[in-house]
Amino acid sequence: MTHPHLSVVVPVFNERDNVKPLIDEITAALRGNPLLKGEAFEIVYVDDCSRDDTLDVLKRLKADVPELRVIRHVSQSGQSTAVRTGVRQARGAWIATLDGDGQNDPADIPKLLAERETSAADVKLFAGWRVQRKDTGSKRWASKFANAIRSRMLQDATPDTGCGIKLFEREAFLDLPYFNHMHRYLPALMQRAGWKTVSVPVNHRHRASGVSKYNNLNRALVGLRDLRGVAWLIARSKRTAIEEI
Image (cartoon, rainbow, N blue to C red; front, side, top):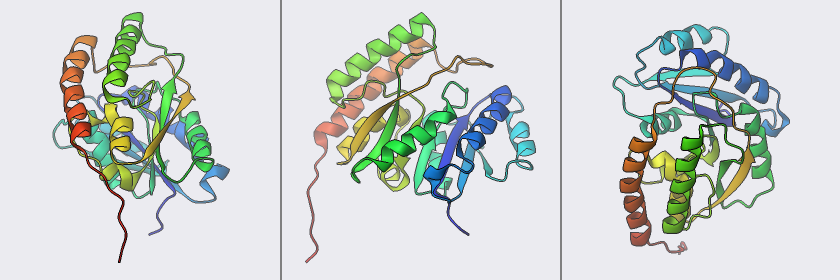
């Protein structure tokens, strides 16, 4: 089986009305795109044990979208685990991720691919940067506050680490330490592993349907614990160059 050039991984939980519009946008952005150099792409949806009929919608769409693959968690495991499941199951050497709520714009995937074309080989992560966020005022304030604390503690030079649209090398991602909520710290973790990262301004949109799975309080409480853990990982890391004799 020929491996695709790119795998687009989308974790979803109770997003039945956002599935088809987002898949239509992904195929519109990538089918025939010259940045794929004539190679195929795939779309890997990971259903995190949705309670609505998200999975049924995905099953029906498989008949019309040959690029679509559907993976299902048997028990709800959270977004980071869903992303990791999708990356592990993906066949592409490079991965693009999108949030399943439709707020990320698939038209920005080619922008990330274009940035990769002009970057050095040691840049393994291209992170979306939501310059003009379309969230509520309280959510924007909470995110700005959290980003400021994270940036000061981790020194990852990333203005928006929580943006769902990213492009990264599959092998580099799978070499990172895994823990719940790790998807919020990918730039710092990539840098810890010795790779470089680049932030790329991207579009951000209002949620068209459904409700957010997070609130500011639970995000903040979990974030503080995780932030201390990532800071510990960085402080305890050690890298060295190697040569074969």
